[in-house]
Image (cartoon, rainbow, N blue to C red):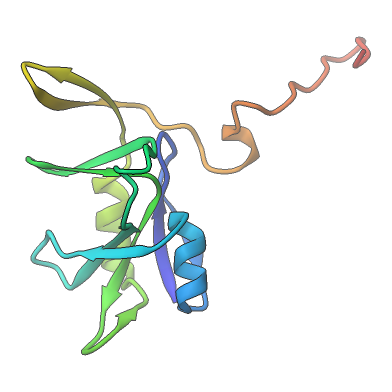
Length: 138
């Protein structure tokens, strides 16, 4: 099943998963919950307890909903999740491209778009910098 994975602070990326409950739980870091906030035949699958467990805020998905922790977007079949069609993959990549910085202002959670880090090693902030030519790695 081809899905779009959205992690906090990182640009969204496509991934192929086997569609098992275990594969979905591995992405979201725990029990899954599906939300259907859009008219398109898509589901947002996130951690059922992400907010309660203090997971990092990720993206604002509507005027009143914020998802904590990683989530993925998939297509909807008649009774199950299916691969996200290519046109919807591109639509939701664009929709979730910007990461969000969050602040509480007047008792409301506000989301401010910020550039995302790239997915993969080049976006890993903990990665050891490569030595420059002529310098050793001590």
